[in-house]
Amino acid sequence: VNSGCQTQDDGSTSCHDYSLNTLQADYGLLRCAIKMAVKKHCIPTDHDLLDNVTIDDADNSCPRCVSELSRDMFDKIRWHMYNGYGTRHPHTPIVFDVYWMSGGRKSSVANIHTEDINFATGWLFFRVAKGRPEGYNVPMSIDLQLLLKEHVEKYHKSPGERIFDVSEINYSIATACAEAGWQHMHAHDLRHLFACHALERTKNIGRIAKWLGHTDGGILAAKVYATTRDEESQRNMSQ
Image (cartoon, rainbow, N blue to C red; front, side, top):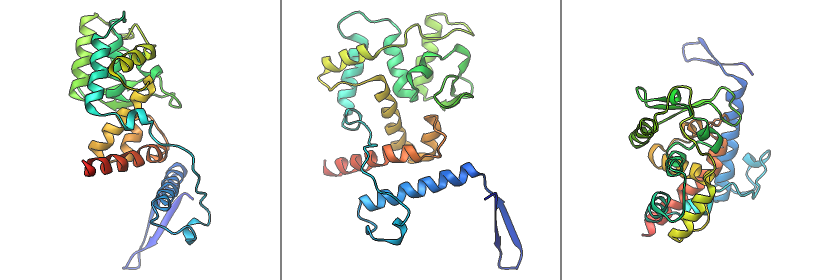
């Protein structure tokens, strides 16, 4: 389907062009919404809407180490990333912060170059991105801008250089979690943390999907994070 036409009240016809990708994304989001409605018992399982929809029990939820992470515990983990025992590369805690502040994957963060940080517009460009050979942009918070600006200046990073000299920090994250008394986490879990924080602020799944570098219009993000948001709301109401 390439176009849709509707007859207006005055007898005229208006047409709109639709791309195949847009239609597929909208259809996927609709299927996702129907599945969520069934699981929440808003739609009976024998409803006509479900004729072509398979309701599965696949676990697409946000990891518990993120969804159950309190702000106080996260602050403890972060403190240990900067001040904990053992020898860490000086870039390690900065990389940790960039993960949860930007939502970038390990390969994306590891390949940030100085010129990818646009302090004038407030956008960070990920030149290496899974499934996105063209890369993508993510907005930077003021804290992230200050963090990156200080890092680039402190280590005298020039255009064309990668800003980080370390990429593997999972061991340091595991150590910091153990020191703080929290369950094991991976660098990728901080990507989920970014998405959860973004969802609290924007309430816009499609926008968050773009910031994560997804190209499905928000289908995967809706599956992973919508339930997390509901659980968080229930916890807040019970407190």
